Image (cartoon, rainbow, N blue to C red; front, side, top):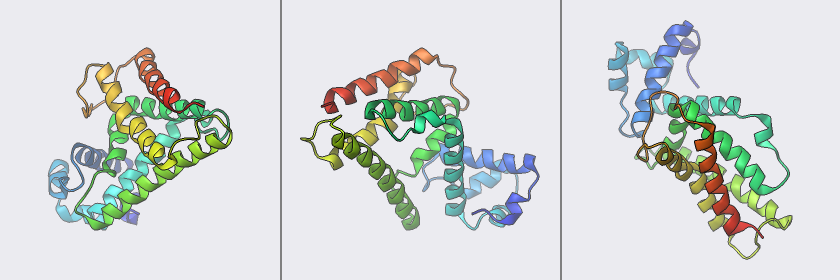
Length: 216
């Protein structure tokens, strides 16, 4: 959690710090991201950051939480439906996630940084927790679909969950970038001026592949 001094900052100053930190941690992996470079960008003393956050990991963790809050706010309740056809649910949830990436690419990309290996043991534990949570969610969804006889029963759920999770995160993002003429891993500085049609093409391709492989 940030310190009270951060929460009590004037809105404009707090926004400036958040935006600079967002750029630093979305442009670089956690290990490469630098508090020294961040304070240089802000034009403040290095000790100032530690008046707001205990350390680098605390700042990064708060940014991840903020990215999650922004994504949830951007996704309609219908996209979080807990029943119905598994492919319709996946389409709605990950389609909404891709729309979030189109609208707020830096915040969306930050969420993928936590999945990268790190030399920081505490971050590695956080990464494993995030990855385990995503895997457990998708595995649970597939297990439920098997019970409803919506998908095949002759497959390993753990392997399928890992593959689906990867395909519908980094894989879908890079397919979307390629669709609009950008190299995989490109990080735009502003919302992408991309049509709904282009967005839908990528979502349809992903869902067609999943249905072809999983549908009972």
